[in-house]
Amino acid sequence: MNAIDHHWQRFTLKQKLSRYAVYLVLVMAFVQSIQSVEVIPEFLLDAPEQMADMFSRMWPMDFAYYPVTVHDAMIETLNIATLGTLITLIFAIPLALMNASNIVSSTWCHWISKFFLVSSRSVNSLVWALLFVSIFGPGVIAGVLAIAFRSIGFVGKLLGEALEEVNMGSIEALKATGASWLSILLKGYWPQVLPAFFSIVLFRWDINVRESAVLGLVGAGGIGVVLDDSMNLFQWDRVAVSLLAIFIIVILAEILVVNVRKRLI
Amino acid sequence: MAGINTTCSQAKIDRENPFKHNWLVSALWLLVVCYVVYSFNAMDLSWGRINDGLGHASDLLARMVPPNFSRWSLLLGGLIESLEIAVISSICGIFISLFLGLFAARNLMPSWISTPVRALIALCRTFHPVIIAILFVKSVGFGALAGILTLVVASIGFIAKLFAEAIEEISLKQVEAIRATGAGFTSIILFSVMPQVFARFIGFSTYQLDSNLRNSTMVGIVGAGGLGGTLFSAFQRFDYDFVAAILIVIIALIMFGEFLSNIVRHIFR
Image (cartoon, rainbow over all chains, first blue to last red):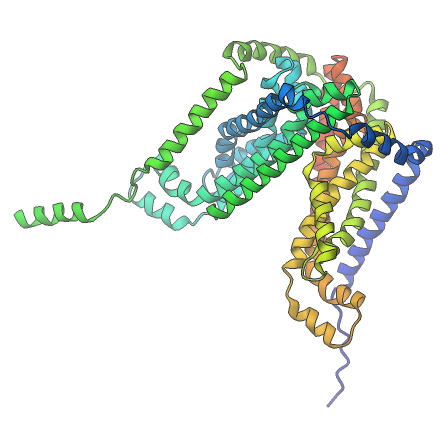
């Protein structure tokens, strides 16, 4: 009997080396960035004092300001988020269908849909808002379209993946009956992706509520406009009221979405 | 013949229509349509304005092409600053989240530690990065530092939350086995918890690195450094050809980031 002298290793040499390479590159990038980034030390030392000053100005909050402007702006923000999410569907559903390889099989269709989905996701919602503000002028319409265009990539990508995961058995059965492609889509694919569809849309709506709250900073309507105005006038007690309103709405939206999703799945 | 007819009609009665009309669903769709009509009215959206806008849009697009790369030094400066913000904030954020995630896991920590840590993480998550950026610009002044702090907060909100959830899902058998050997707390974490969750932690981290890269090009809009500031001032000066150049660079940067994070995810799988 020869002695067993296996030395057990969790990773192969190649795996180890590539992992260490990643760590090394990260550390190098970090050191390089720390050395070259422009940070003014005086500002950093001053920070606690400035922060204390900001919070002391925020405290007693100007609650009388809420019914005057904040309430209407909050409703507008919710409308921007909801309408934006609904408009997204007009673009996202066809792109998702084009992106799903079991529905459309041509490669160039995939590339076209991928291009639109990726460019929608790469451009931040604030940048979309800037673009639409310069097209339609400041106002709600820019906000709605910014939210809509930003969400296309997210909804389209996830919906396309959900479509690719459907059980092809029932689709085949429908095809065998000679059903038209519209019937196959509506009665074969749609019932199977229904839970995924609603949870994707709700998830995006939750994100959109957060995002629509800041679009106003570039003039695209909603609570952000109120926030920007009171910040430019250094009325920090009013800023605090707006922030509190955003905080409460975001938490309520999240609770709503979590509960609805629990029922759906 | 008669017999066949009767069985046919019998079958028709027995078998329900598999695609029955669902009135509840129709009512819900009607509700959605009503909402759209109401919100269009409430927000003064009109087709006239949209029509006007389409004219402006073609004008804008015409001014965007060809993209103007002549001020490339400005563009490169902003790009490098964005990259620095993304790298520093991701690494700091990942490092802090590693500990906060461990402290927030309810199956490893007593509730008097995990509850406050969870509350802190939730607070980091609620506000949009831009709002946090505004607050940091007020407290540490304009520049990259405000951007870095903002994205560190955003990273903690995302990675620490998901990491804590991943830890709560681990199998406790291995923890028990390591504990039975008499290992201390650090060894338990290193040899029974981390191997189970490390791959997922890397997944969250690379995702956040991606998203920090995106956000680092945006926080500049409120003065927190990076390419966003350059973009915003180009917009305000109506230099749309320069705007197009910046947008192209941003999209290229993000695609490059996705490519890199795919490689990292592949290595750590």
